[in-house]
Structure formats: C-alpha cells, structure tokens
Length: 157
Image (cartoon, rainbow, N blue to C red; front, side):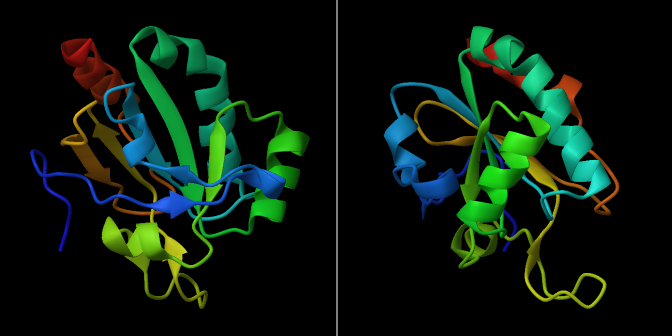
C-alpha cells in the first residue's frame, strides 16, 4: 500500500557506503526533518543528474532543517564508488535487500528486465517521523518536484 501523507513513516536500517555505520530513519526523530530520495540505479544519467544537483543544493536543505538521504538497491560498495566518482555529498544508503523500498511501496517488480529496482520517489519526514510529502515519479526519467519539497520544509522550520 502506498505511503500516505500524515501517516508514520516506516522505520528502516540501511547500510551506508563502504562500511559506514548503519543508518536508521528513527535516529533522526527529534533531531531533523528528512528528505528521502529513492532512486533506481547508481551511475545512470538521470540518477547522476538528480544526486549531483541535490549535492549542489544540499546547504539549502540543511538551512531548512533537513537531512537528505539517497536510497537505492545498489550495494554499499557501488554507492561508494558512485559517490566518489561523481562527488556526491549527500548520504547514500544501500537498500540491497529491498526492505525500505518495499516498506515505502516504491519497488518496480520489473524495470527493463531488472527485478526489484527502486522507483524514483521523494518523501519528506518530519521530526516526529510523520510523512509530510510523498511523490512517486511516473517514470524513472521523471524527477521529483524539488520546489514542492522545499515548500513543505519551509512550513516545518
């Protein structure tokens, strides 16, 4: 079932890049709002563009009291190489076991013959762990509405 605005976000524990400590969504409660960006696959053109743009705008999100987490089904090692090559400055998390993607209902069963790839999606989670914005993009080529995301964050700060 799709995640709805106003509901409690499902918690997750995901591995960071190349051996970073696991990250839980619950660890941000009472500390920071969170922007979750699910993306299909590292090293693809649209994902690279999205995450490099987010890196450029990262300080704007931090100024709005938000942490930004990029999540894909790639391994932590692939994500580490991706972050290093593209100089991505946001936290990238591996949902290799697809648990977070399933919990947020953003998993393609089949994308061009690839089974279990995350859809491109964005969620804003407030400091109480409640979903304040939810967008699942119609295709992997579409990007989330970042103006709307920043607008929601402005109301939370």
